[in-house]
Length: 500
Image 1 (cartoon, rainbow, N blue to C red):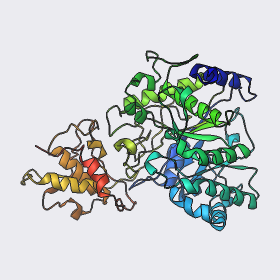
Image 2 (tube, rainbow, N blue to C red):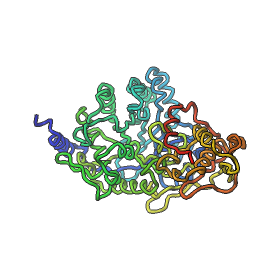
Image 3 (cartoon, rainbow, N blue to C red):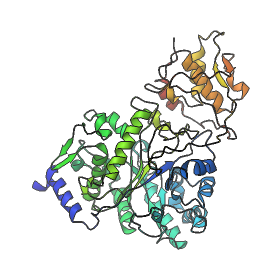
């Protein structure tokens, strides 16, 4: 059983990496995820002209094919990875016609004359270019997540194949690559050692078909990483290990020595790919970042430490222990902007990953391409009037907590979560925060600050320390969270405190 020992497997993987023709240094191109799950999003043109271009962001990953967003990117020279939402997978799996229509509407019309280069690596001078104006289409958004059960699994490969056939019909198959973003839970291990990792057994057949497809078309494996979630799930690993700090306790895996969580995660996927027979497949990071609110350890300062550590690690060009001197080819920071309507069924901090706030103001310093300059903020942002909704202290507020919980069911109160920026403001300030969140969500409508007579509109900013009471942006329709499950809200409500 010599070859079954973890240290021997690691050593063989290292030899394979060193001997591979692909084991040369390839510089990492850094882009950003741009999500639009916001009740009052910045106009797309403002994002492009006010954030992406001034900060020299050269690559963007989208979660869908929003026409307004793609139109705003036309002519910008910014590369784009365009996404297909999970709820479209069943249709694309069953209908070649639907796949052909999607490719026509969301790819063909932008290629090449439209000016949008979807993941065109030629946009990065000095970097390795696979092919001129090569595009990526991301089929699904982490469709294999454990929390999804097997809801999307049966449709992924069929959707991928039909999109590929549609590309061939459009004579774009040699210039567009199809990928599937996968979360870290596509692999499993009985420990944190990368050498013991392997793809989940319930995904064996699906993953085998998907990897065969990716290999045939020379497409990379797309890995999404959530380091804070992994920290919360890892009792034996310190936060220093996740933040690239030199004082972190190292992880020893046979002959391999890991100094940070990023490398061990990537090498867990390398091991899983190797055991599946695709050990030389390229890996790109579809998203990685650190949130700034909604949970303990989710702060702007910690996010900046993580980003600076990640940037320094990528620039060091050392690769990972299993792929030395073979850097990740492309990485997308998660994310550009906060999104106050992003799904929080997994974690409350999911709405606070932005380098920028919802209104385009930088929360901390990071190099997105602008170099040593400070990040440029969005300018001329059009806000609603400086008005807020607060609890009326002249009223009997003994039942105000119930009204606050009701308000939060239709607004974003994640900053009130345990460890959040507003978790310590106390009562009734937390009631005021809930009232104002609902009031702004609904465009400052006077009737949206009633709450059975408990609400009061004020022109005095009620913000407390780091707890900021927002003002919504103008000219955006307020969108209530449709059909938000009562169970989901109950889970959030359990960590919000509205009491004396």
